[in-house]
Length: 168
Image (cartoon, rainbow, N blue to C red; front, side, top):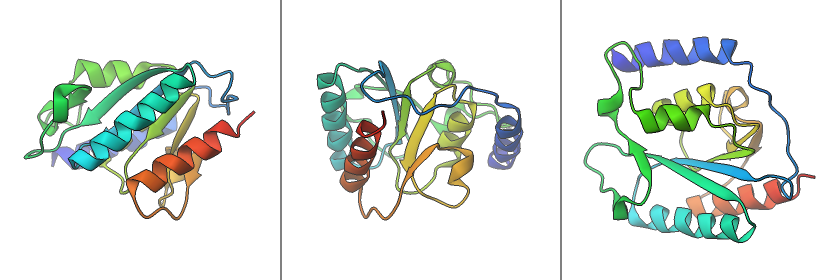
């Protein structure tokens, strides 16, 4: 029931969100957000390496992860939210998730191979200028730049970096 309310709220937010979307040149970009669903240690390390690469490019990186039940939060390195932060009425109560959604990132990278309704809700609320992620049906509602035909998380991250850095 909570997820149904969340989906309803997400659709309403998509219609109301008037955030300024623009393809910022990668070299001019200063702030980058990364959001992803915790899956396994391999994905955790891929995200950490991506962060290092962005920081070498002199980007300020902020990370938020969705931690599903019965998954480990490796290193407790990043801010996170869980399904416990979802109220009966479909509101996400996590202050770190709310702050993340309101941050005006130049780029926001969504590193999941399959869409997660809780993360999509935050993408819909996001004030980021350019949201980047894997192609999926209805993805154009949530993302400005979509990467198609990727088989794994490393390929997704590599594709996102490749195409984002080409934006001028």
